[in-house]
Image (tube, rainbow, N blue to C red):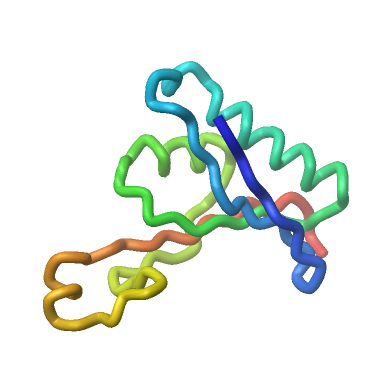
Length: 108
């Protein structure tokens, strides 16, 4: 599995940018362990929150974020992937739901 996160000094958050586990190893707690590592990093470096955005269609991904303590803060039905023109054809075939999550670690 892999995880990538980026600290943002301007709003004192860590953004969980990517998390992936090979399909052969899913369901073994690897993603949860990777997520916890990001949370540990954020706490150790005094960030106030961890945020993420996802277009995951699998319910398991959303359940994972919630099990780590994240709360969904918004959801968009009209999300546009980079490079999409939003033509009528693309809008018909590519209806992408984008969710934002946040885990507040401490108050500012």
